[in-house]
Length: 107
Length: 122
Image (cartoon, rainbow over all chains, first blue to last red; front, side):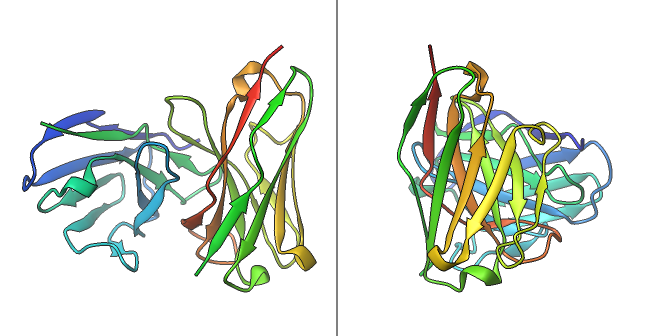
């Protein structure tokens, strides 16, 4: 199975901060990488697919980049709604696998 | 607007089976695949399997292949996940999620059900 490793596992940030979350795959996955946001008690929500394409309705402060094994999710200016846990997911090969998550908390 | 509405919480004894439903609306059911993903308490997400809603064929994670059945009723626009041989380690919230495509290519999940809590306890 392809292992997905996210860092950090948690971070504290303030409103307006720029936040960067990284995701590393155990082997090259091209750009078959997607990002989700999950608020407490809710289902995940797709933010970015295929490494860098913003899902409809997702604010433009979210962006994704990377290819191969290293990927980044950036939140340009953190807003109150953005405090949540973020997961990456690879779809290069079955079984599909997720990262361990990054919890973004209020500083 | 896409809606996936799942069945309610279940409590099962070890070795039992559970069947969770996922009722789809707001789109043509047979045009998109459905996945099942679970999340144990405080843990990350775990993919279980994929269903081609038009043809009914499936792909399962090897971890669940021996005890998982994913099916659908197209007339009811509903997908089902049945997991057998339950243990305490199967206690989790189970989600259905719609794929952006019908085929199994670069799957990502653009709509999710609300989740169904399955608790396995003696």
